[in-house]
Image (tube, rainbow, N blue to C red):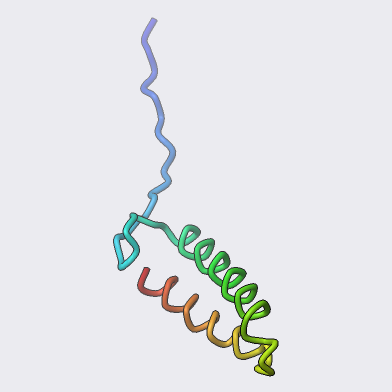
Length: 73
């Protein structure tokens, strides 16, 4: 009676350290950028939009920040 070796899953988790203070993978960086998108838009709707600035400006800012987080985070 011989024991068979334990097989490991052939998945390589690629993490990297960018300007974020934690090691992240691609999903983590996308998730962080979505949270930033929601937070900036809520802040914009509460404080900036009543001054007459359209909401699409916040969306453009969030896309730029999200791109930076996913690319360099």
